[in-house]
Length: 213
Image (cartoon, rainbow, N blue to C red):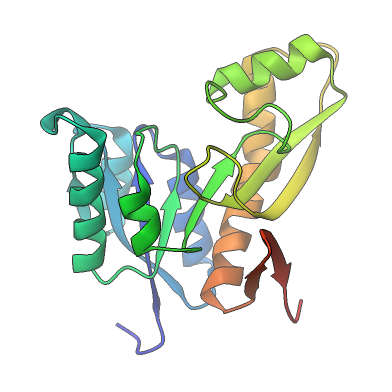
């Protein structure tokens, strides 16, 4: 592995569509110094693991059900990431709750993508289709996606990138979810990873500044 390579772990719980976007971006040379070194799943048998295998990426299953408490799981997760010498952790549809043991080991080094324009439609309970159902119920004209740094408070960490997406009158939660993935999530998540890997992100006073861009 290259000397200056930034080792990335992608944490998944399901199909891994955002993982695929990152894999594709890396193959196009769009992750800068970043390299996906590990895919870690919170349950066995998810399709994201097949994506990793297809592209020769090391994978590991750390099943939440094997641990009695969040604290025990979080310690095992943090230990596994440290053992692999991971530089950046990306949550890509990782639906398992973790605690401060992980955040303390990787301060300002955990990224998450959320399918709305934070601070709208975020926080506890806002995941998957629930986000898009809430957006449509509110009648917003634009929604989108946000990449943010993960902190102990849900969806409240410093914002790295955002991209707006039009909401159409005939949208269903499913069609809006798909458009936001295609037009926003799959674009800004790889870009945020590149910015981190290339040392472009500065975090000050709960804000992210991008240098030299």
